[in-house]
Image (cartoon, rainbow, N blue to C red):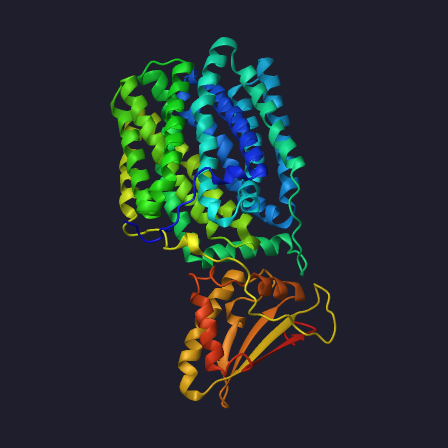
Length: 546
């Protein structure tokens, strides 16, 4: 059986690896993820012996994820405005330098908890700048039908590294301390840089000038606010991530204090989570095709709740190990489903900005959640904190019944529509010439007036998703009817360029469901006498009051 939002076709999880560039980047990312997880174990284990470990250890996660809360939106704007490949090369090189400095200071005995957390924060800034661009290039590497599989492979890379990296780090830390672990992570960025230099991303021709940064930021936020599909994905992500972060923040404390494990034993527990995630990746394609995305979210939250509760209540290594395997699979099922839905719901012009908001919810939820669970553990106990988290995860799973993901996310058509013809101009304006008043007049029969205005209301809401920072807000984006039955619709822009941006952003589906706005547009044309029943005039003004 299938549920709403399920695609009947199934793409192999391994299909994206047939692309040479994707395959090379995936392997390089796997190596880099290994280094990142080794660094995480090294940093956390440096703090376990501190008297304030219950508070300090979760701050490792906070230090690496908090930068996303500060830089998510600017990094998304940056990735939409400049070449993403060059941006990724720069950020990967900068992170390699930052981790190299951390290794040097640790080797010299200068890495106090404050220094460690500060450098992890700086490295996290590089990760914040990387994440939206990395996610946004995925549709450049694989076709749209392979995006869910690519999301699963990306999660498999992260979690496969989680399965192997901590175990390696545990051995290395116990033998030589964290310095070697940090140094190896610095080297792990080299592969990604080389592959990105080798890849030649196809040039994208634009018939209009790029947006300014503030206008792009405003347009991205407006799209998110006006898209119910995207808002629901972000809600589901927040409901899962905030309570789910407890395991990641408190696992080192449970491993050391409740299970009496060394760094290598802690690495094995992280490895169980990673192994479970790899298992989940194998099952994801089949389960998604059979049960649908909302069922996967429910199962994922429930499975992670069980793993969290077992970690809190059972001080037996073998039982905890098995529960964490289930937890790892549940984690991947939830996050791969959310990630793929987000990528498939965003048109190209705002993809990096939308993904940056998703990263903000994901990483920000982990950062704030880690602080909350750490403080609660310090005030009560780690077990109590984990039990509260497990209860909230169970509630998250049940909430899919009331707040499911919207149906048919995988079928959205985000290609630009050609319903706006290229304008014929009596002179060639500069991008910043204006203000510009775009006035469209329709001749509508009086008997069709109500139906026409209802259809125009839907189109008006859709325009809010594509409106740039230089196009006037709703009060000036209006429709009125005069005494002759002519309907006039006006849009005021501060300059010529924002009007062009909005024209090129219009697509058939990203404004409320596949074909919904297209049908309203067809109704508008029919009610106004067909394609020739409207006239659009653009007027360049001396001032907004002209």
